[in-house]
Image 1 (spheres, rainbow, N blue to C red):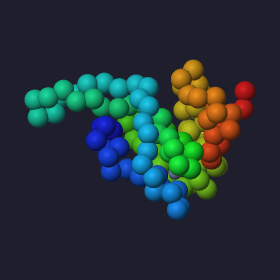
Image 2: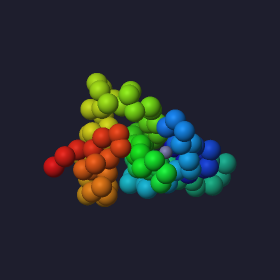
Image 3: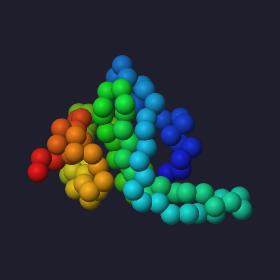
Length: 104
Ligand SMILES: [Zn+2]
């Protein structure tokens, strides 16, 4: 995903819809119209209003409602994301993230 996407993304949580914060962990440069632009591969999106977090995995922002994140393949994928970047992610998210974290 590109940085400009953050300008149009809003928190999908009901009654939130706040602007989001982006922390990039892995990216690469691509050429677009003769200019180098950053293509984000892995990043953490956080919402300063409701304190939810969302992962960017393989360039795709995964911004699903809580109930679709809590179980199954999605949960496994998002827990693997937290595990992968646990050196960089704030302990408050790792331990007590919304909608979930990974307990040590
Ligand atoms: Zn929110």
